[in-house]
Structures are given as structure tokens and as C-alpha cells.
Length: 377
Image 1: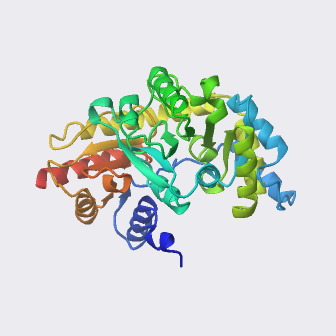
Image 2 (image 1 turned 135 degrees about the horizontal axis):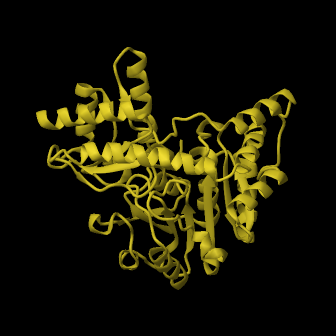
């Protein structure tokens, strides 16, 4: 076995989600706030298209980077007029393709932290080097050009930016994104943008990095149907990239993944044709959940955080209760039956992440249990 593979751990969030599911199956009263999965059915139009495709026996191979009609549907919906559209089995294969095709052994990737748990391991799997760039609480856990300038070296080849951000719920405004664009241009860096939470911005309009035309020649932007259309298990992601990168990614995907699921493609075409009212309703539902959970946990004096501006997570400092965030989460699960994710999984110890991906009743109960736990600690 290659040494690099032996050093890559399994996804912490998926492992914790599995543990919570197993405890629940064994009869424990568990409220699971670990997984970033929309807890709603996919839109009816997507279900109907999926069933129709199955009944029509559309179960064969499709092109490695997606069928032409789906790629066109993505282009129309996203407004991606420049670059090539690529489809794959979720956002992760597209991220892997981007990293694997533009980076070589020893190349550095600037990685604002806290960050999604899989980013550093995906980078390491290709022999590249993740360079954590800590984001400060006083900046709302967004990275600034000043932070980036202090971390860049001649070996840097890319910046990987998640916006809105998992795990903190941070959102970048147009001025902050412009500064990042100028930084990447100044240092001749690729910009890999993960915007899978773009539909979940609660106070202001979402600004995409694609909205900056002068960065499109170095931008690989990735999105998916998992969050926006509750299609996590159907595994369907899409990306836009300039021609040279797209050609390399296409070859990578043809060998490493094969092709997207033919049935998921039909469902995606159907949901992409929906009016924005679907996304508006989804956003309002999660805004209400955020407000409910934040209202409750912000009253707990030992916890500190800020109301998330996007995604569907609350990010809380627990150091006044326990300096070990992993132990905090284990104790909370053992004593109160509430499963959350330690900040160490996101390269930021001392914090925890709560996913508000349960209904209001369960969120209220989870907050009550968390309050009880903190009072007893």
C-alpha cells in the first residue's frame, strides 16, 4: 500500500454520522446534527423524471463529463457562458479532478481554515501540499488578502476557496472576493472555488466568483445538486473550467470515475428547470431554523459564536467548557444523545459545528440538551 494512502484518515463527519446512526438503530434517542445533508425530499419534478427514466430503461453509460442536454441545462441555469461544463458523480470527483490535473508533487495549495474536512486529504492524495491559512474570528472567519500574502510562497499553485463556507457559515461579499481575485492574478494562481452552498445565503444576495470575468481563465468553479435540490444521495455535481483545465479534467474523470449516473442526470435536468421559488422556499426554511437554533444557543453563557450568514451550520467556541473539542462532542453524545462535529476535523480545534438539518422540533430539543450539558459541565 502506498505510504500516502496509509496516512489519510476516513472523513470525520461521515464517521460521526455513521456512529450516530448506529446508536439510533440500537435504540438510543439521538439527535444527529453532524451531516450536512438537506433533510427534505427532492422536488416532485425530479422524482417524476427519475421514475420516468427508470421505466424507460435509461440505465446505460452516458458521456464521461455528462450528457449534452444536462450540460446545456447547467449552462442556462448557472449563466456559465465562458468555459466548458463538466458533470460528474457529485462535487468531490470534480474537486479531485481539479486538484489532480493542475497540481504536481510538492505544489502548494492555499487553504483557508477552518475548512471542509476532505480538502487537505484530497490535496495530499495527489502529492501536493495543503497550506492552512487561518481565518480569524474578528474577520468573521473569512480570509483576507493580508492573510494570503503572509502564506504564499513560490511553490504555491492554487487557492481553494469554499464560499459560503463549511463549517463556519461565512459568506464573502463582492469586495472581499475582488481582493481574492486580484491576489490570485498577482501570484499567477489557479482559483478552485467550491460554491455548493450558494443557494444558502440569508441576508444578502450571493456573489459568485464567476461574476468576475477577469478571473475565468484561471477559475475552476464547482457546484452540485446535493444541497440546492436535496439530491445528496443521487450524486450529481457540475463544474465550469477554462478549456485546458477542462480537457485534462475530462480525461481524469473518464478513467477515475467513468460517468455520472444516467438516472440522476434526468432528475437534475428536471430540477434545474424549476423557477427560483424552490430555492427561495428552501432558503427561508433554513433561515428560520438558523434563527431558532441561534436564538437558543446564543443564550448559553459558556458558548461563543456568531450567527451564520450562509450554508446551514453554526460554529461555536467551546473552550470555556472543555479545551478538547473532540472530548466535548463525545461527552455530549454520551450524556445527552446529541451528535455534533468537533472543530479539529476542520483544522480548527476548540470549536464545534452544529448542522441545522433537522426540523424545528428536534433543533429546539437539541438546543435544550446542549444547554443542560453546558450547565452541568
